Image (cartoon, rainbow, N blue to C red):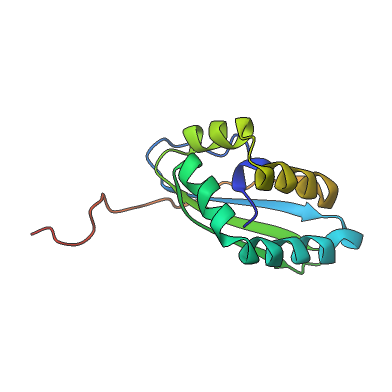
Length: 130
C-alpha cells in the first residue's frame, strides 16, 4: 500500500505513538493511475510484506477519497518506530519501493498537514494482562 513516509517523511512527531495518518492531494488527472497502483500492490503482496519487514511496519491502509478540492490519498500506518521505518524506506533498494516512490512522485501534488487533537493509546500488550 502507499507508504506513509513517502508523503509524510516527518510524521513521527511523537515517539510513542504506533499509528500515523498522512494525507496528500492527488493530481486529479492521476487519481486513476494511483488507484491502479494501489490495486497492483495488493497483487504483489509478497513484495509488500518484504518491505514491511525491512521497515518494521505491521499494517498499512491507503484510501483515495473524493473531496471538494480534489482527490486525497489517506494513508494509515502502524509501526513500532516510525523514524526507523522512514529511514529504512528512504534507503530501500527494493524494486517495489523504487516503483512506489516513482508513482507517488507522479501522482501526488502536495501534502496536507494535519495534527490530531487527540492521540491516546493503551500500552502493549493489550491482551493477556491481568
